[in-house]
Image (cartoon, rainbow, N blue to C red; front, side, top):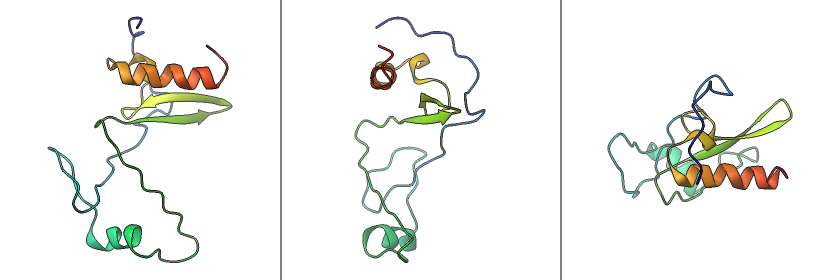
Length: 106
């Protein structure tokens, strides 16, 4: 891995996303929180109506990344909102390289 470039401004001007609540029964760390029982029921038992689209994914490594479209550019980000390539974590840099590869830049 190459050294991370200096952190710059956040492409979105803020965090990429906030905290994601855990389903009941999930192992929690410090600062983690659960969904309410009502929210969990909507996600695990029955949607409210035909307009609900529910996607549940399992997070394995305790680390999150995202891709944002800013104008016509897809930008890989860490949760903090900075470019993933500038992260100190190798998995974030590998994710950024993967996104750039899929964009045809690598």
